[in-house]
Image 1 (cartoon, rainbow, N blue to C red):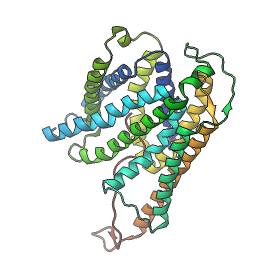
Image 2 (cartoon, rainbow, N blue to C red):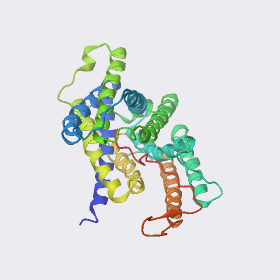
Image 3 (cartoon, rainbow, N blue to C red):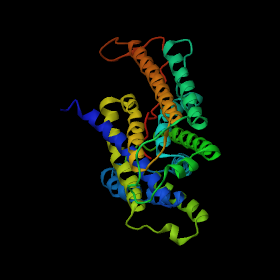
Image 4 (cartoon, helix red, strand yellow):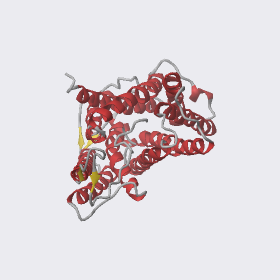
Length: 363
């Protein structure tokens, strides 16, 4: 049973993210402002994580210097606040299925940014290096397919929206077509780019502040303040800020507590047991879960273009991960034991590693 636990954990993680896409889209369809939603979500995450992090890490936490605080502030602004705000706008323009599909670009974008920042090496003369390059190109092709090609629609039976607001296929098709759909795809890619940059730069900042739980809580707190400033500047209607016992409150509580709290712990546990590549390999499950459930729960339209784009994104993801895995094995083979005092020495290989996770730890 212990061997099956990591597999059950990754299935649960991806199911949690599928629920995030569905509930967020349902809240936006119900009229909730996306900027207000992001503020409430981050505030809920802060309230949930603060007592836990203070209890477990406060006594052993390193001092927070002014420079580290400023870096954390900018990291929260770009990687969380801007990323989530753009994600919310893009989700309004598109669909939960597209949001889940573009999540597969995150490991590829993260790797590409790591190469630009010289935290990762791309060896084009080797087979693994070419596989990673081909994967990046395929992912770009998938993103273009999602944005510009619709194709035939798959008609499925859905007459009533489970969350209480009726969304007919005609309305959905009108919302997610033409320039609006392309704009949403573009914003979703930008959001994932900010997300990937956050993952890469987070590894650098955490060297000066290694208390992971407190660091995450601080980012949530700073993001809450930033999100509030943006929301209060753009949303002045008091009715937009009201939370009642409906899907809005469920979405805020779910994204703030379950996604940020539960999935953070599960992902850290899976990475410790099986590594980040194993976790990243399970990312396409989110697309499968979201595509199936969004058709029946949100009455979303599934087109051939969305299916083909999703397949290309998954193929590109696996190509990059395969190349990365092969390079890691070659590096391990190049490390030879020499004596009892020194465990290994690497000969003829420049080992460059990045601590950026292959899948998000905080969203």
